Image 1 (cartoon, helix red, strand yellow):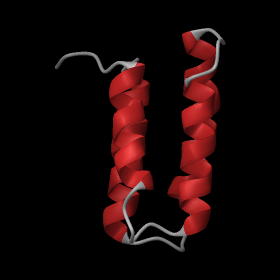
Image 2 (cartoon, rainbow, N blue to C red; image 1 turned 120 degrees about the vertical axis):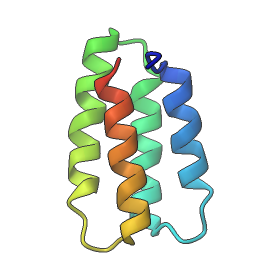
Image 3 (cartoon, one colour; image 1 turned 180 degrees about the vertical axis):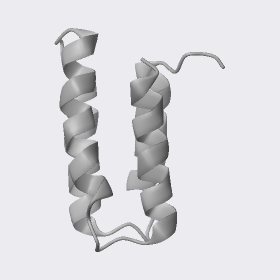
Length: 81
């Protein structure tokens, strides 16, 4: 499998942010994660911070199973960086 890039992950996050079924609090957290990934920090630091935020999101009981699956998909992409 090809390694994901930060740009690929940002694209997936953007698609999730535009999904009308995603709760506002989840969209807000996704926006924060996008900002982390676009920061000037080293890749390892950005990924670690983003993974922590994604982990919190994955444990949110207020979202649909489909959205949760997408969140874990993003986590998998982050892990491949």
